[in-house]
Image (cartoon, rainbow, N blue to C red; front, side):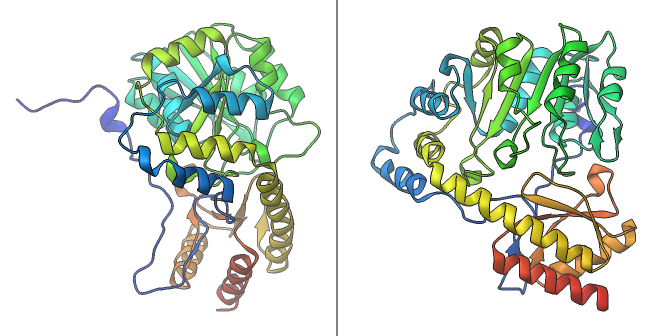
Length: 360
């Protein structure tokens, strides 16, 4: 008899990350994964190297120093913070803890692919709520809720669109959502946002028992390779997460580097300033080439090539030039390409390459 996996697993299309190399090309611009072009801070690197003599030791299973460091930096309650191997792990743990076979999970149309993937793995049913003009539509999200809904995911700011919903919209969503539905706010890119009408969701967590905010060290902190994230939630949800996570789910290297990274305000500021400057410059350059872009508060730009065929041609052309960016077919945006903001040199290479493509 053939082995049979649990329901939903064979319906999953495996997540495919951004490319990192091109055969026969030495100089690569890696702009497919929204990584920080400045890398990790010097303080984080030093902390990482400092644990070399302790590699034979198990890490602190409760990530106490890391949770305390996060709490101090973000002015939060350390007891309500749960750390994980990237926010991906925490999103998966929330699904596994609260979603069963045939339960439903609502998510925004162009949201992170791990929302439906994680739901299917748990045997649940992902329910996609349409967006309006590449923004989360509050009415559509609420209309998608049924008696079977257990979790609602939304990315704010959203990847890959770069859009966000305001504090007023987010509060309305929470107020009109049933109390037995867990609202999970994925705020992976919140550090890049300065808009006065935006909140990352921490305040809603403190005001409600059924709200979770997830964060990552992979983006502005430049620690993507260490797989480090955290969730801020009610004491009840934190207790559930601590019961289902692995006992040593965050490595010593990640904890050490994470503590140093979140305290390094200077590196965070420099990263934001570089991103803001190059984001605006790049959008202007792309616009002058006759290509459409969308407003973005993240560290990436969604470029519209008009058709899926043209976008595929651009993707291949850029790859041959050593410029690795991200096709958006899996997100239902086949006519678009997502381009991460890199260094100034890298962005000039992208502009030159796009210019050559348009004129080819």
